[in-house]
Length: 174
Ligand SMILES: Cc1cc2nc3c(=O)[nH]c(=O)nc-3n(C[C@H](O)[C@H](O)[C@H](O)COP(=O)(O)O)c2cc1C
Image 1 (spheres, rainbow, N blue to C red):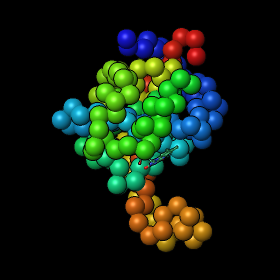
Image 2 (cartoon, helix red, strand yellow; image 1 turned 90 degrees about the horizontal axis):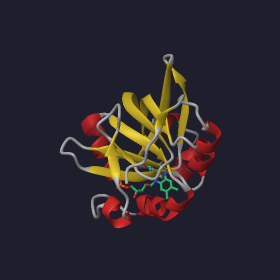
Image 3 (cartoon, rainbow, N blue to C red; image 1 turned 180 degrees about the vertical axis):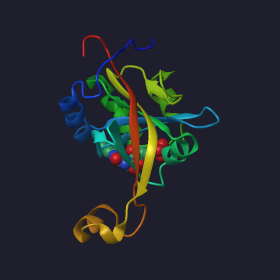
């Protein structure tokens, strides 16, 4: 059954979102031009105000299947998982949509976003619907050497997507 959510301010339960970003991670979903949807776990990101707009900055490596889907449409959603979705968060962080349909595998349904074509994930009590208004590829030369070594080792540098948060929706009891 689809999850009913109501519009809330972009910073609704933001402390909880950031705690869950750290552990176990949030679910970034995207739907490509052909209609193919996928989700990947993200552990890094930021919510704030830029250009006077509420923005979710997501960091996605080019090697991710999801990267190609965002490139096709410029849209993504960030979904805050419910506690009982930990297994699915694990699946989305370890398996690639190139190889499996993670939604079918996890028995998880989706619905189209209200502001974007990218899907939102049923069972998630809070979702952010985002349209990329800017992106930036990480510049290795500008990065602290110790972070370059520990997080990259010379390749697969993140693309930072600055997603304008067009809508934030929460379950009524969240
Ligand atoms: C806890 C956790 C956090 C992660 N955070 C990110 C992230 O912020 N950016 C990223 O590119 N990959 C991140 N990953 C890795 C992707 O989720 C993983 O490579 C996934 O399989 C990619 O799926 P895809 O190929 O279907 O897009 C994370 C993985 C885990 C387990």
